[in-house]
Image 1 (tube, rainbow, N blue to C red):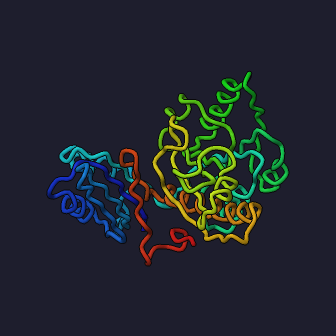
Image 2 (cartoon, helix red, strand yellow):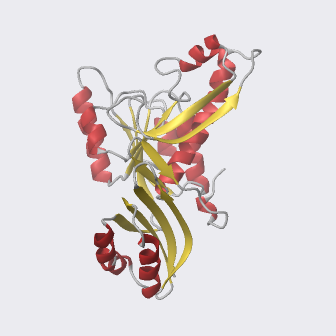
Length: 294
C-alpha cells in the first residue's frame, strides 16, 4: 500500500476537514494520522494528513483529483510520497558538531534524507564528508568574491535538485537574494536562545550576565538576520560554578539536537510558516520510528 501525506494551508472555513476526509475515503484511502490548527488571530487553517492508498491509487491522480476541493476552499495544498527522501545540501564552516550529528543520524536512518552535497568555506571536514561518499565542495568566501561564491553555491543547489539547505554552523551571512529565492527552504541553527544574546560570542555574553539557562534556536533563514520563523528551541541549565568553556560544550550539544529536530520536522512536512511564526505538528505516538526522534 502506498503511503502519502497531504498538507493544506488556507483560510479557516466550515467543512474543510469533512471535505478532505470525504475525498480520501472516496478514493480508497485510509487516514493513519491527522493534525490540524486553526489560528484564531489570523484566521489561517493548517492541516497535515498521513494516509494509505488501500486501492493503489498513484500520487498524480490523487493530486489532480484534489484540485477541485482545493479551489473550493482556496487551499494551498500538496500531496507527498512519504517514502521520498528529501534532497539536502549541508553548509558548514569551522565548527563541525552539528554536521557530525546530522551525518550520524543520517547513517543510522534516524534522519531519512538524501544528502546530495556538503559545502564549506573551509577544508576542515573534507575528509569526513568524502569518507561518507558525499560530494564535498570547498568554496572560499571573501568580501571581494562573495557574489560569485554564492552563485556557485546556488548552482550546486540547483544541479543537485536540493529541496532543503541546512546551515550547520555556516558562519557567513547569506544575501537577501538567496534568502528570497530559497524562502522556506533554508534552516539555520543559532547558538543562542533567541532573541537574547544575539551577535558575536553569545555564550560569553550569557556568562557575563550570570544566566541559569542557555539554549539554541533553529529557524528559517530570511533577509532579516536571525529573525526568521522559529522552528525549534531548547535549553540546558547552568550554574555559577561552570566556566565559559563549559557553556560552549553544553551549548554545542543543545545546538546539535535542536537543529536535528528542526530538520526532522521539516522533511516530514510538519512545519508550516504562519507569518513570522511557524506551526509545527508533533509526530503521533504510533508513527513509524523514522518519524520519532529523541
